[in-house]
Amino acid sequence: MVKKMPKTDVVIVGVGWGGGIIASELTKQGLSVVGLEKGLERSTEDYYMVHDELRYALRYELFQDLSKSTLTFRSNEKKRALPMRHYGSFLMGEGVGGAGVHWNGQTYRFLPYDFEIRSQTVDRYGEKKIPKGMTIQDWGITYNELEPYYDKFEKMAGISGEENPLGGKRSDKYPTGPMKHSPQMKMFTEATKKLGYHPYTVPSANLSEPYTNPDGISRAACQYCSFCERFGCEYGAKADPVVTVIPVANKTGKFDLRTHSWVRRILHKDGKATGVLYTDLTTGEEIEQPADVVVITSYVFNNTKLLLTSKIGRPYDPATGTGVIGKNYAYQVVKGAATGFYDDMEFNNFAGAGALGVVIDDFNGDNFDHSDLNFIHGGYLALTQTGARPIQNNPVPKGTPSWGAEFKDKSLKYANRSLSVGAMGASMPFRHHYLDLDPTYKDTFGDPLLRMTFDFEDQDRELAKFTAKKAKRILEEMGADHVDAMEELGPYDITVYQSTHNTGGVIMGDNPDTSAVNNYSQMWDMDNLFVVGASSFPHNSGYNPTGTVGALAYRAAEGIMTYSKKGGQLV
Image (cartoon, rainbow, N blue to C red; front, side, top):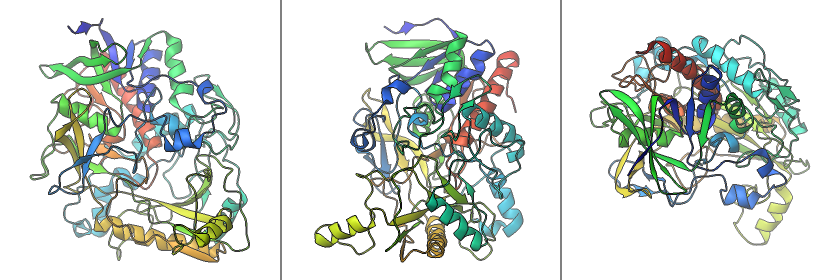
């Protein structure tokens, strides 16, 4: 027997950055909001003095239990997909705050080019520049239209930074100044300036100074302890939903947060969402939560899976290129990087912060001429100092044996004598990169697992070669005695960590035939259903995605308020 709860104005599925922002904004304006979170609730106090690399970084304390729910993967449609039972390529957070708890805090704005990528690429290079099968499309919103929401997210989170000399125009400066510069960062800055590039400090959600945001939330400054990514912040210095937006929602008395709540279906009738069906994981009880508006704010994969299992929207068909749910899955190209080894210089790479670094965008977006290149877009190049923790880090030059005396000698020698210049390459969507329901494998409740079909393309391989060569040149200018460049991308490997920057599946646009949501994250097919997150990205840029997720969440909140008063399609 399903237990039916009293109706609420809004129910949100997943309480991370997207859900937290929606809850905060709507409850401040008087709406009642129920937030359903599959995981448990943690606070800053839970992370006091737990710099435990084994527990958090290698045993995945903050992440989803893959034995209960995961996804399946195959590189192409001719292969049988198999479940991902161990973490590798990316990490799926679980618990109140979601991925916003375990992120590093690097908070970029996408470039104006990103939002109009197809039209700007065609205008500059012609239709032939876009290779066969690449399904890039404009986002249905411009950078200038989204800029006020970027600004709002940055002020809420207290982002520390300085203006990107090659980025879009800003309406205001960052609310706090840039992070400190280490000797390594100064070396990168000097080298890139000598090469004619435009370095700037990585925009950081790790506070450079104490800060009180417009909602009255005060947080302390970063201590540069280096335990950010895969960890919760014991100081509250790293902006996350638990220390920013969720307390604001709680204070209103209008927010009902329910943990251990596994949402299995979006309920709907006659073209309208009526609520959600979820299981209370502490009792096993099935519960219906009716609502006037439903907002899906979970991770990329679950956003897509919920729509497919709930039979909402038109599933994407790669054979015909029609349908939209599951379309344009994209990732990132991070292997086009380089590591420099120094014989006579030592560095303290252990100290750091999640978003400590210096970056250049000279080879990002369309900031450089692609006429004679076999790829579009690009990526940032950066030297980041995020904390070289001892278990996960052991840099040695190529050709070093993986065991024995030589391995030990070089491991000791280069432990503090190496620097890396990393790349964050953009990922373009292709017709045969998509998400759908697996016909074989099920989750713990018997629902189909989501299936990913994805591999790297020539576009990605050419981009990796390009950025690796640029990274190598920078390290040579920084005085490295030996540089190893990672030019060969190879096939996509889901077993090796790369980035937790998965995008697409419920993409946005200005045409219901080619997109699932409009620029308010409102479903074209169901006007009281909103889907918020990186699932709405039509492609992935050469940046970390969280800043754009936050901006789109603020815009969605504005749209939901308008919808609650007037109803109907917002675009």
